[in-house]
Image 1 (cartoon, rainbow, N blue to C red):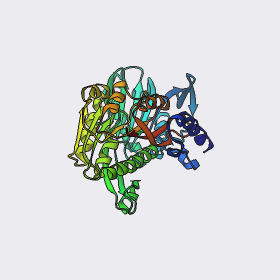
Image 2 (image 1 turned 90 degrees about the vertical axis):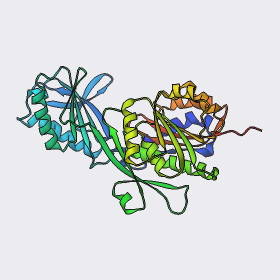
Image 3 (image 1 turned 45 degrees about the vertical axis):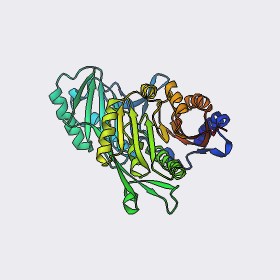
Amino acid sequence: MDQSRVKLEKVYEQLKPYTPEYALRISPCISDKETLAYRCKCSFQMVRNNDGRFDFAVRKQGIPVIIDDFPVANERIQRVMKGFISMLNDDATIDTVFRNNLSSITFSSSWSNEGDCVVACNYDSLILDPTQWKQQALKVCHELGLSHLLCRSRKCVLSAFDHDAILRDRIFIQVAGDNDDEWKVLFGDAGHIGRGIPVDYEKPESAFYHPNVRAMLKALQWQLERMSRISRQISTRKLRLLELYCGCGAHTVALAKSGMFESIVAVELDQRLVEKARRNVQLNELENISIVSNDAALWAEKNSNALFDVILVDPPRQGLAESVCKMVINASTCDNMLYISCGYEALVRDLQILATAFDVIDCTIVDLFPTMEGVESLVHLHRRKTI
């Protein structure tokens, strides 16, 4: 836990010049449990020793280091890892077609420990007998309870099944008590017991999705609570939201189901994520969301006069494009911006630019990858009133 606090305090000091002290806080891990079993996507190098047995390895300073387990992986992935390495090394029916030239492996799972799990095997050379490989892959899927198993080799992809490799999840959102400014984001059976609104997701195995469900739920709860405060300020109608870098719609559909929004325009460049965002809109039977397939920077340049009440951004580590910052500053109808950042150095740069028109009124720093590098900063900026 001390490591988590020290890591977040470092970012706290970086953000302090741009954030009032009353608005800046950290949310470190407070128990050993929070530092374990949280990652739902993990990749490893496969190392073969002299007697032909496989081991998982992680690279440190360019050198593969063999590991016996990976406790930061969620429970579902840890179970599959143990079963997979056992089948590779001890199951005589898994032959050389499946084993030879296996160089690395990626485990992807639902946020739920009881949900889907997809394994992608990466090979140094093409599979010479695809039919035999598929037979072996189906056996592995059956033994380990996998929802899919993929082979990737030199831009060629083989699949155990004919359907797409997707990861499904359900969360629940609900107002906490009588205070509309406080929300709960629940997972699993807790949502069924309460008054939670279900939010369903499908995520593509091959594209980005949030790798830490605990951090994701914290971020979503924070967004709902900040949006509630903004909604109360604009009490005559529902909010108009612009979301840039929307991914598969993990924030988009949950916010829409809160009932606070008149309309949401969500922009994403990665076509795999665009398709899943549209699918998630359909799954949740939402009609007030428009998913736009475009680069956020180009969209901002062409829509600088668009009318929105709130802008939500969740960019990659390199932060916002210059045109996005310019659009936000010049968006006269938008007094509020929520910025989800996984790259605090880029965040500092962007806050310096946005400070010409906005003040930070709330900032929470969350441990994104306990025991490793990586934080997530949740920043609410409000337009400064001119006299």
